[in-house]
Image 1 (spheres, helix red, strand yellow):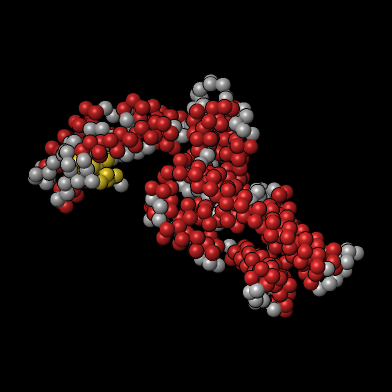
Image 2 (cartoon, rainbow over the protein chains, first blue to last red):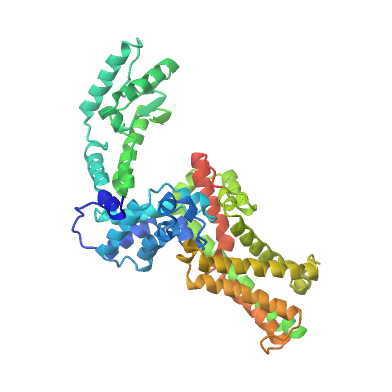
Length: 264
Length: 223
């Protein structure tokens, strides 16, 4: 597959038309500029040892344009150097790099002699690009769903409760006495799922319920914050990402559980 | 000659040393205070065990996966760093650093070994410079500054070597070469807090941070 085709697939055709504001960009950058970020920006000795860690680099016949530190220098490095005074073309190219040529898997951190956390640095560039909705379209759709429904697929609370009850009914035939406790206060475990399970693979919920039942665990699911995916984070939408995590955390506190278990 | 070295130059040396140390202490305090407000996530999971593992494993030759996959680069960088640390402190020509203020006898490296170390140093720095110019993945991120720092370090070694053997190089007599050698040393020291040479200290911080992030938080190794 050609490079342009690959890019075209992930690219968002409908970025917003907010004028590029260096002040806003610097605000996002400065928010991320803690002691760690300062150290990382200062520490790269340009040794090139991160190259072999990156599968984008290896998959492109070791084309140095795909090595992690080069990608950082081209995006975050330039944003800092130019003090946010960049144009839309620059941001579009940066978006291509931070979403098209990096998955933020952080493997490069294991190969860097200084342990520079490049995943977090790419995340910062993503936040800048996301300000102008340059994130991949699918991630932006998911982000809207988080904002509206607190899960990435737009499943409503009624649908979620219905699904659990239906799965419970189906599974009790096989394992009498099995229940899927909903919002059970004081339970030990709060079980959260990938919303995909509720929408397409309810048998996964059934299987988890069977394990909890047989193991005799005191568990519950919640009506709020039950989707443990966080695509808003990958979209660079930090605020939505944080709110979504908080809803799970709030549920856990309200129910007084000891542990949050996330699905496989 | 010995008088110039003992007199003004050693004075300049200690002034520089303490000034640079002070700058680095201030830099550290500022970073620490910033980290307390903006990097709270670091302290939530702080673990000395993971921090130390992360540092030590990268100080042992071939102690990490990355080093094992690049044996020549690893050997070059370790030779460079070992000679760069050992020689300024332990060779006989530098004995006055310690003898004057402390009366301690730290003459540990014989002159013959020092010569061998110089050759090892020269070979490793040459390897690193050539790699910078030749390997595409290094070349693409290399800046003029990277070469300049290598050149400065190499020049400091070369002048030291020439001065020790009392050769006349480039038509300059040994005394002036020696002064040049000392001034280059001071310059490199001054550059530590402001350039990539800072990794001499920062290495320990960045390694500790990633060790805690991957180890204490996720139980994953970073070596």
